[in-house]
Image 1 (cartoon, rainbow, N blue to C red):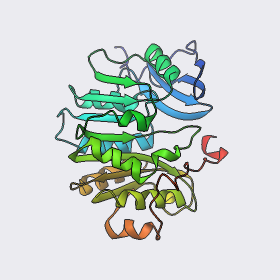
Image 2: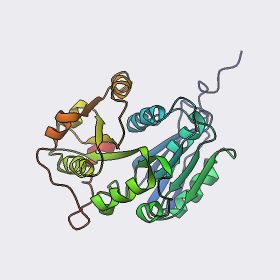
Image 3: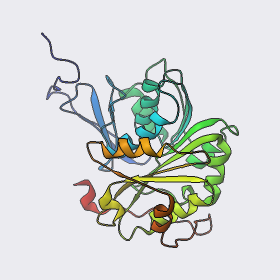
Image 4: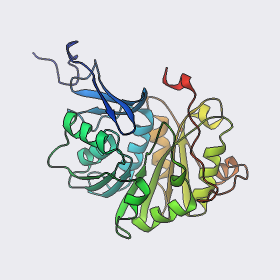
Length: 289
């Protein structure tokens, strides 16, 4: 009896794909444990993992946390309209297409050469309703019709840092304009001690959205190490109990902060505007070792 496709080990003869893209040197590294799975690195920093046989599989911890939000954004299987700012290997767009068939999605990825590489080496399901636009994230977001999106997912990094113009109240005004009244904004934030960037982003989102939650590893929240935190924001109620349960039961358990504890976490940080915005801090070299 043959092995299942997800248990078949990849042949050692499969080689990495290495190409220069607009954002640096891209590498597609074959996953030795999953037959048609690849990890995308840009200048050595892991960006995405894709399993072409199982697009609902999310390898990266932060992407699983975003996946929890996607799962709870609507009843199971119900199609949604989603905007992804930052494409990478299109992992999260593939996830939505696999778990919510007939969803309509727009991906905004500035690196046109990277998009070409991903489309060629990791082709999308031809039945997936995914439109990829090569543009700056904020410029692409501005072209989304008012009130179109159930979800806006921001996962944009340039040189492992989130660009400054995607951190401000003015940027969030564009996000809110594109969202339906009950829609949710989900952002992948990266920071380390003393967590000034993360605190500022929470304070900024609090000026534009009625409900906030933050999902992260406890060590990151305590400022013990550099890592990812997932900000979830909406003007409607958030599924806090379900998010908390899913985060706690993950292979890498996370905490969900909201309400007064999250407000206190900001420590009086001021909202960020276009005039005061700065890129997120660069991760220490040890993060990618």
